Amino acid sequence: MSRPELQAPAEFYYGDTEAKKYTQNTRNQQIQASMTYRALELLNLPTSSPAFLLDIGCGSGLSGEILDDEGYIWTGLDIAPSMLEVALEREVDGDLFLQDIGQGLGFRPGSFDGAISISVLQWLLTAPTSHHTSSPPFRLKKFFTSLHSALKNPSRAVLQFYPSDDDQIQLVTGIARQAGFGGGVVVDYPNSNKARKVFLCLFVGGGMSGGPSSDSQQVPQGLQGDGDELEEEGKVKFEKRRVSTRDRNANGKRKSQKVIDRDWILKKKELYRKRGKESVPRDSKFTGRKRKPTF
Image 1 (cartoon, one colour):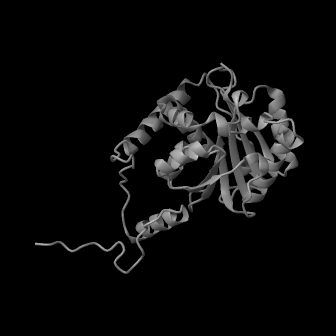
Image 2: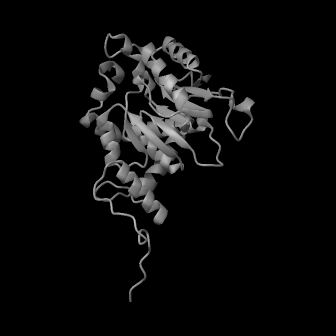
Image 3: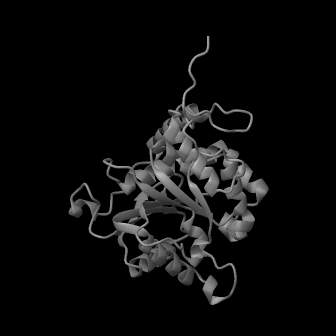
């Protein structure tokens, strides 16, 4: 079967049917979860303060749910409207943007503490039209230049993708370096056809805060072995996440165990206002106030 990026542009390939099918597939959920956890490990963020992350190609929010669980604040963007519609139906916590990353990201400089991307970058390695602005080098340059600008100094971006050959890896890393990034490629389980995963681990500036710059500038080592341990670990983490989110009401909304206090309510109401939802109750001194027991 032909790879998805060779069949049609992402905004057409992931229509309404395919977007829901992809999101509901438990195998896809497990793979997405495993690679998101690995990307966060490679991102190596300091734990002293919450981080604001960019999820590039966020799709229906499978990675975003993990970012929520891990305590990150995030913004996601995707080119497929149907994927973002599914994400809105699932009520993910991140802000969502419809964006073609091959045309640049459009965020203010230094907006994000880090960025991740799962199974997206290979879509920039195909040319949807014959125009020069659709060529992979042009689109990659736009993407990496704007990503470098959007990240704080110092910070990292970890991008997992599926290259078809070594030439594509060299093309991607070469253009990333031209945009100002340091770092390189991390290959997990290089000797396994099934478990092999390629991550582009990019650095902005002289290292992450909270750790020695020399260590932070070193490209992490890829995982070795046949990948069985990664799959089992991914299953454990995935099942743990499923247990915490499996209880849903009739609308598919997760029954959160978070503390529902005034700050939480105000944050949710502001998020709904930004998304254009109507009939959001106004704020008042009674917002979030607990009712006294009635006898």
